[in-house]
Length: 323
Image (cartoon, rainbow, N blue to C red):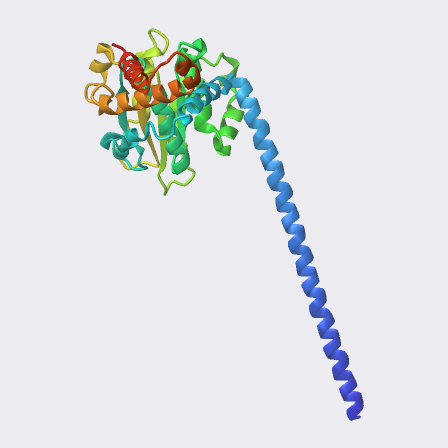
């Protein structure tokens, strides 16, 4: 009897062990199945979002390749002489503007032609992207690329950058394009409305502030007659930056000095490169010196001395500030 009871106990324990193993295997199989289902759903959602994004881009007729080319060219040139523009990040007005806080919501950086405004803009954008604490939006206006100065192209560029990576806003625009709204041409007025409507909704978490650093370089090269209109739109975007809000948009505008802009922006914090000529001259002279160094062999053949090189670099720096 004792032997039979021991045998029954052993059978029970074995059965329990088998049940435990089977249950464990079943849980593992269910977990794997769930993970595979979630992965499939995520891929489906990702593919859907990508397709919607492509259709929105086609609908809005946006092409950011030109802006990428402009920025790449400026960045490539500035990277040949690293550290030459670091001083701009230490200016008090810029330090406040660069922070992800509500302070210094608007800065106008102005200077003469050839003073390096675009290179400074590229340096600032590089710093913001590296910090990765805000959404960074930019546009470069340059006569070298006529379309970059057109008001409508600027609006399309800003709108697409605002929604990039935000699947909710992409889905919203995707639905909007099939409504009565899309049956009319996407006019500058419509683009203004979209930017003004979508910018305040960028935060996915109402309890957490979303910061946007928006940089427009070459404001003075914006399409003739549309500059004030662009300024008005940008000022509306930054209008609520001083009060508690889920989205705070901080604006940096770079341009040549003009009496019209000076009157319009007279109450805005300004960084004048003319007043920072010590830093600007040093950076340009360093750039010129290194550029001349690349011609060293040819200059040696012409019996150009180091003293002559320094003088040439200083002269180039003086000529570069627009005088």
